[in-house]
Image (cartoon, rainbow, N blue to C red; front, side, top):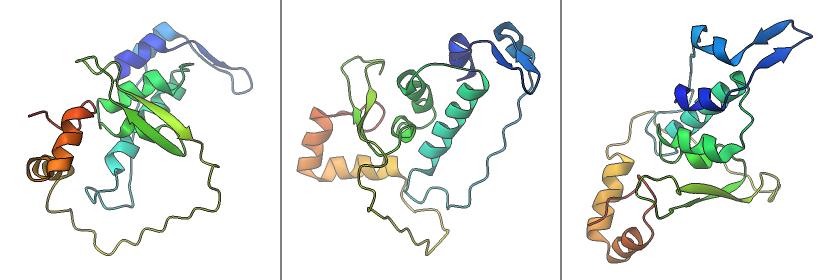
Length: 165
């Protein structure tokens, strides 16, 4: 991920804090990233997607990347497919694209995070146990056993989500 971000990086300067980092000096920087989550991992609520989106966004800010979220989401998607939706706020659609390498597989923000200001979602953690069936395994099994879902997977397969038959 870092190399793709490095290509987009620019010099950074904060005169107030007296910090200046040139693009060519970034390879000599040592960065330690520590991530802590107070939410159960593998509970089925895309915590890995949120984590990879946060990692890519933070590294992009550190490297003074000026891109919009489109190219960053493709980088985040390498860590977790759904991460492309986690960079934006609000409601985001994941477009499949036609290119076999996934380069056309992009996110589209349908509404911003203020669209439904009165919408409230409450999640109650009743168990911190890891779910018994992974999302990938569950999707594969569902596609095999559900006719309509099989049709959806064959016709609308997002890159990295469901395997074709």
